[in-house]
Length: 266
Image 1 (tube, rainbow, N blue to C red):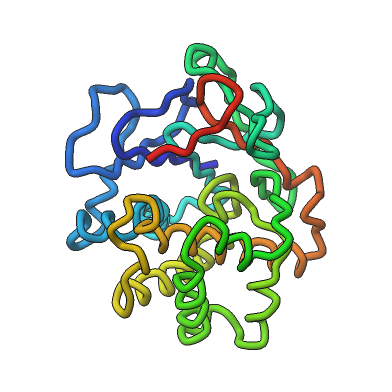
Image 2: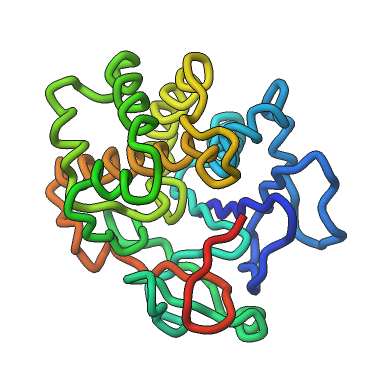
């Protein structure tokens, strides 16, 4: 198993399992650490410009670059500096985010996060959210025009079949993090992430987010990438006849956060 923790302004806020690597996504050197650090910016030309527009989505592309170079096989696990997915709940259920468990920072440093490789099909993801309708759920929190433009580019680039457009926009489930949080077979994840990157980079070439001046809404590409990644994952699980409620593939998403209310981070 290859485990990457994507960080951009601080090291992980929980006890890091042995063998994990930090994917450091910043032009500033990381704080001193005994952990193995991979400089994510080394995989791109003009990384700071890309990071400003892709936000968290660039970290997954850096992991893709490392895996493509090293070809380790097996599974890849992707966590974030304060988020991780395990096969059991370790914290307190969030009052405002279904399926998420919150862990106080003091307790997170002592957690035993030794991560077993999940059983076949070797996938472990956050519990899917029941959103009712993907496009409407996006519209409630973001500018839906960005999702529609992203969907059109997914069709133009051959990532999404045109006949699947309605099913995608009307999808009733959303896997938090898409395919950028959790554990996946490397042989499946690499081409899947490559497809996402193709759409996201096309968006950068042809569009800007509808509300680019808003610090939150300018992350539109990452929000859309999460949703298309979730769809690619759900489609694959259904294709191999694995239910999206199967205990083998559904883990618990944790966030290091004080109290019982989840607050989104940077």
